[in-house]
Amino acid sequence: MDLSGNTVLITGGASGIGLALTERFINAGSEVIIAGRREDKLREAKARFPGIHTRVCDVSDERDRLSLFNWVKNHFHDFNILVNNAGIQQRINLLNAANSWSYYNNEIAINLDAPIHLSLLFAPVLLKRKSAAIINISSGLALAPGVWVPVYSATKAALHSFTVSLRLQLEKNGIRVFEVFPPAVNTDLGGVGLHTFGVNVDAFADAVFYGLEKGDLEIGYAGTEKRLQASPEELYQGTKQSWEGFIKNNPEFLDK
Image (tube, rainbow, N blue to C red; front, side, top):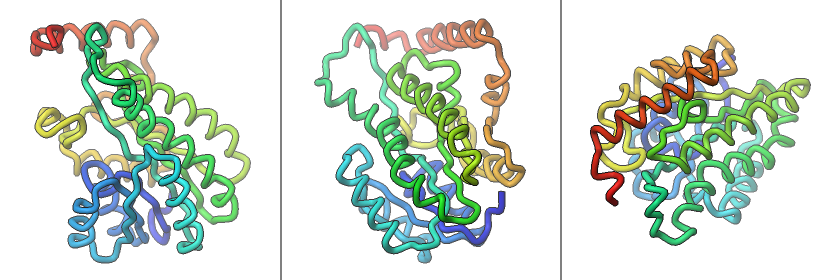
């Protein structure tokens, strides 16, 4: 995949993995548009990378997604790469799900509704573009769920399934569909300080770009690449061991 000379839209591009990918696309010689919910974060990203374009957009809202689509289509006629990156992660004790459904559904809307809807909107536009691609940022938890983040894991598993279907439907139309499977990455996903044990975001983003450059359609890192080759039994046992380790380190979780 040629990483230069593109016009790229990255959702959730103002922080974490999205911002790291923004920096690398810029350094590769591509034009970058980032969308995010928080205007202050978008301003910070713009101050760091003055050449980027920003758009306030809550991807959980269908109207905002449609507005983003129309704005990109009308103002960026060379747009050719969509990066579905925006996501949230919530720890949930399923025996004490005391919040309203809208609280839990918001995670589904951001992590699953948004990438599916944006892919459906932009695919016909991408048919007319050279070197067109859709890059879905999934998760290693799509393959072996994190039991403490059950809705997040379910959304990523569904996104993985959708991405496979999307890839096969679009492969004869010249649109490449990539899926990235991050491990735990040291970002603020799920809350400040929750993923300080994770891999360095810059090292991860470098590995992603290396995989994209090679043309790898599925890109794992720091163990998630092994999950792509694991058997169902291996994935189940890994899930069980991770859950037991989490409860050992967070015994208060089941009391919440």
